[in-house]
Length: 266
Image (cartoon, rainbow, N blue to C red; front, side, top):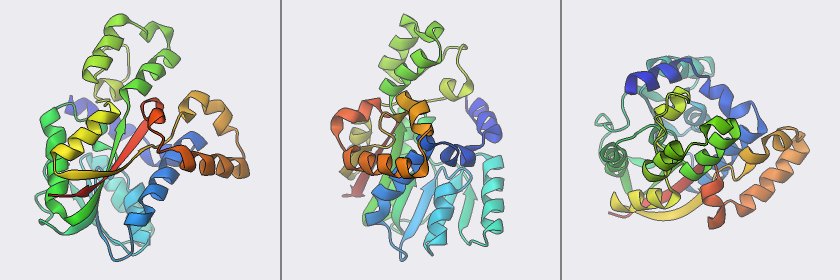
């Protein structure tokens, strides 16, 4: 399973994904906005699952001391190349988010986990990532945990093809958060799709107190054509509206991505 995941992301343009369309821009812009009050230039920030460095490099540009951890070698290479091209300095490690023993205890102000939980199918491994975040954070440090909602994925499967609307597939997704059918691409087969309440529980169980929980992109994936056609002024108007409503609990399950922000409390 990990080999298939690694192969998928070795070929996938993650950096372009965040910026190529309004429906993906909103994920990036919302995440930055929600984290703004927790991050300042004096921070030590670690990103577990940094991909090509879109977030890590953004914060490095602000003079923040950034440690970026990424598992896929091809993405690590892209991250290093991006940093070099932008003349940015940060520490980059090729490693699994479940074990970041090279980061010392109680040294980080903020830990970002903005991708790893999408593909960690083992509950013990998901807990291990959060335990590592807790270990490396200073007292009252902040963790940001992104996830993909299994309720959104059910709708996405139906939107992709009516052939995917099968009792067995929907039941498996609803009960386990997995989609193992060979009829879907590797992103889904290697994915883990969570219930919003589950991520809050995971944070609490690993020593965090939940500060905020937002629907990162809201329901834009179900009105994707309309949102992608917005001009810049219209996009900014939609973003402003979205930021004012994204903490509404009733939106969490319908959003593609969710974000839990929590403080180290033990």
